[in-house]
Length: 355
Image (cartoon, rainbow, N blue to C red; front, top):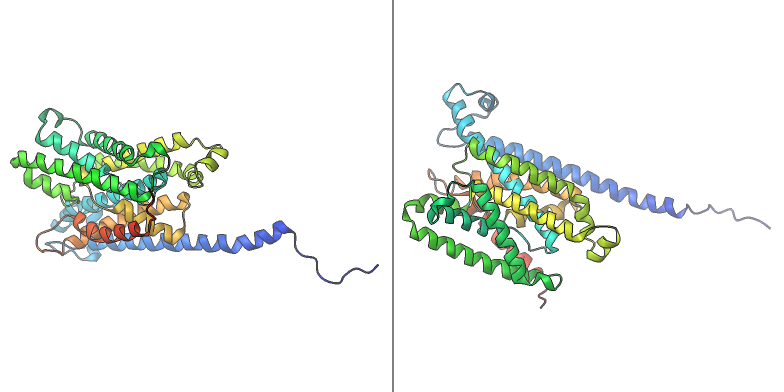
């Protein structure tokens, strides 16, 4: 009995590995290139933001100005422009990661801090403390923002009917927009009642880092570190949650605890960001969708890149806002709203309306 002279096929696991290897390599290369591009954008945006203003500073003088504060230019960079850049990066990172977490926890692509009323709730409580209830004004602004953000987020989820199973994207968006409109209207009523703080509060309501200082950075930093560390630690549980509740439970995931912890991190990140910069709009909606298109849906990669992308977007929005009506400056929230509103409409139109 003769044997065939043909070559034997490779084992199944070897063939599968050969198929998988190019895809894994390509994805890693893509992540590397996207990360490098974002870092370049951050470096260029930082240099651009530090150099422009009423007094132009040459790029060659920036390194000395960042680390020393002897001449007038160095004092301007170190005391005014550098904290503004750092705060923009921190606020953008907080809001973008919060948006990615919220979309994972709600299993909803339209979930975002500004869509679900979280930012509006934080704003309402802070303005309430400033204008109507003086006894609350002594409380830390961040803690007030935490309380408002948590109350608003829970209310929107209940309004959308989350207790009856998975909520449709459009229903959640409608509930969030309705709650946000109501909270913003209440905030405006509070401002009307207290005319003394109208100018400063209205500017803060749009969202921006125009008046940033090192005190704001120090107030935000510990909460940002806690929020980002917790979010990065949740990356693998969020990947399991994305498979569906039944599959996640079958793989040993405590779905309820994951959602609760993720929601708490959203409140921490959003409350901290809003307390120092106001409700900068659409960062938590735009960045996660862009990053997913670039590197996929794995939260191990998605969350760190959202932090970089969010920081870059707020930094560039703040820089561009200085050119809208020179020599006056508008808040960065105006620029992010102009970018984010069309994207939100596009995403909403793509979702299938379900009852």
